[in-house]
Figure 1 (cartoon, rainbow, N blue to C red):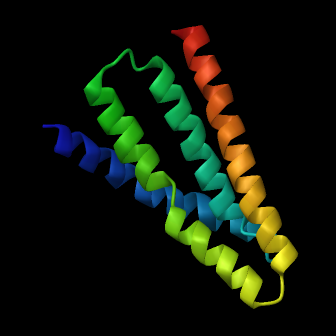
Figure 2: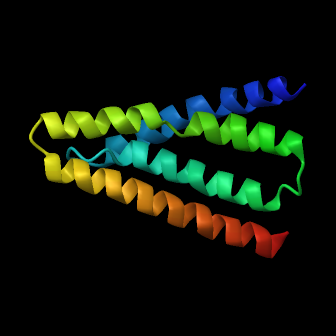
Length: 120
């Protein structure tokens, strides 16, 4: 049954990631990958919240943590965009993107975790 919850969460997370990326990218000019950053930070927030407030429910963690947050975030696109920026002469932007993604991701997950603990 757990695999079905992961599947359902992923079925929502993957298209949601695409829609976030397209929506944000359409509103931002430039080479910085704002869409992927936004989707990844949303996934960090969701996972921080779920991990801190799911009350140990494996079903909730499977559906929202593994399925939805897992499909919403994307490490492969993150890595590809860093390489693409570096190869096209935007090495500083690649470093800014990689550092900001990691630092902001940890910060957002931590804040969401604190919020989950406060609410739960």
